[in-house]
Length: 467
Image 1 (cartoon, rainbow, N blue to C red):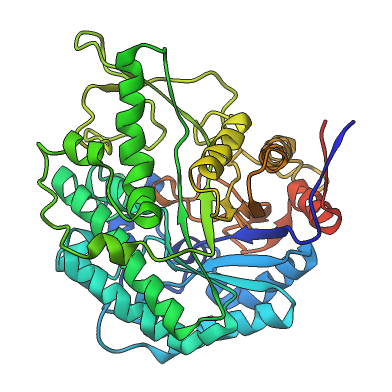
Image 2: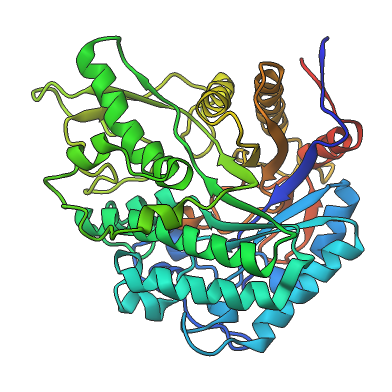
């Protein structure tokens, strides 16, 4: 048996999102978000599940921080619910909401855990969506004001500020395919949302630099590893087209200061990109201390021949509309298993490939894995334990892939397992369990799965045994 060794400076953490765990949807002045509206719309979520109660973290946060401390984690990545601290998305701030996050941050610091705060994990205040949502430039300006308020309140007690989580999902799944809130199917609006999310990142990033200069600045992207079904020119052009939509639409403006020309050309029939104003791309390209990378599975594409039945096995939920704007000539192919309960293929080498690509293209940009994990159909055994061997194997292999990338020069400085707790899994409701800690949704009792004990040992030793 060989072992991967991680240095003592390597950060071990876990991650959650506000709407997925907090509950208390109508308490202490919190306003409605697009996910409240979406989940309460019949037919939108599995079993009609909502985040009204979720894992009740709002009331059980101190106990949950105890689990984080007992796991021996260095950092905890959580998100701040915009409608809890600024219910309408503009105007007055809600002191009760700010106080909740202030207690959370102080509780982490008291336990020796670094707070990593994500400003936006998909729960846009409904009032802003009613005014146009991310398709409207005004939302980016409101986000800048929200950032100023929350950074001003929490100051430099937060170790790392992350502006956005997975803007790809917010833009394309929210505004093109409609499988995420707000559930719109408007391709031009989706591309406008791409830009206004990017702009919001840049504007908020500059606020953080000004108000909390000691804090680290980050953004989290769910970057896709896209492979072609063949080396043919047509299939490789399909790879290029999807890479532009999935990856370079965000990496370009954020790290290079410009949108890729091929993205603009590919989508010219959908929009003229006139929502990009002079100076926007410069605003977006705020220097990052760390690039957050979320990874779960890989993608296989080919050029559609115009005759065969279409294949849309992209792993992003069933819809009559596609998230892949202006890519009607691309097929997304099923991949060999094994699969997680989400139906996602398990492909650890693709994570190594992704990290080495980023290192090659952005050699001076440190990275962290801000989400990686797997949903499986966990069962409570007769002994009361959850023997989630498949999750342990998934984590071992993917953390090993991170070690492989580091060995080849990738500057990856930490790993956050998704997720600390079982939670509301968006359109899949409570049917999919990603947590290393089980939540009994009837009693809210937390139970460590075997994967939690495994991760605790890894965080303590920094040594990953390879089976």
